Length: 428
Image (tube, rainbow, N blue to C red):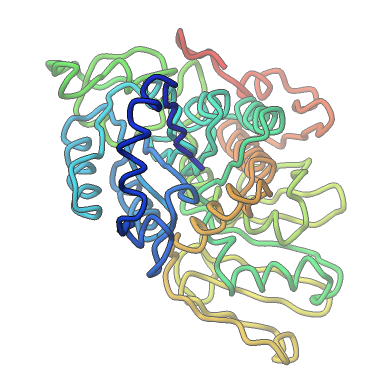
């Protein structure tokens, strides 16, 4: 957390010492907030946060941060002037002042020594690049998902966090919701018997590439910084329809479709259930009859399917073992094969998918320097599973993945999809 140290020159000290001594006996009034009383957090214990790319989802995340008493949000960075202004208004109203700074270039924000952590909620095109730059600048980060554009970025992201020792929390907030955590615990600890299959909802099994739209008049940089918006992606002409967080990729790279978007939530939970936060499936088959089947080295199947779910809300997952099964969704409810699986336990039902608990987990880990639930290693391998499945969809054939070499076995075309060229100066 940021701490302020004031240096007083000796000459100034001597000049003021006499007048100061006269005031020693006078009563001193210190605001209770400065002492951490009345529910306030002392400044020395606050986590100073800045935001990068605060749009629709980012605004929601920011609200969760602002609700935490030990957070002081000080600056917003966005390539859109309208968003900078909107976030500043939101923050200033929260604190009752006009002190939230507005920044266009995220590098200026990362250069600030008073900022401890950053909220990264740009479009997916920027997530990994911004996070890696933040880590190198000594910042901890809460990064929205999908966190990476391809397998190579996933590995680089995890490696960077290991080397820099920064706290990274992927925006996979369902890891901090009680019913999802309990379902994963049942699977991971053998309560369902030997685990056989885990199911993820992909919200679509299509793989697409990004293209160009007709050129439109490019606004000034002060209104929309188009070049910065493109960032590491290939240059293309301005078109307002692309200003929605589009995941630019080039040269045969895949945008991702529903497998990457929902998969970075649902597959993440499946990975947690399997106990696979540092590994991924080794075989990926193209979709057949509405299902895509991947397999782990231990034989457990990871099955992507769009239909056949119980009515438990969005982002459903299902885990099946030899003796039992469990299914959960965003309704906050669980359905179990036997009531005995929950005997003696009370699991809170939290409707929807609030990020408040996930943000709190991140902040606590910033203070303790421990691993949050959605740490970079877990995010890396969940994203590898999504990217590999997406490649199998795109190529329409089975792919086998070597976890030691991190390459597809005997498939040159698939291996080219593991990464993409990045535009200068955004090479990682």
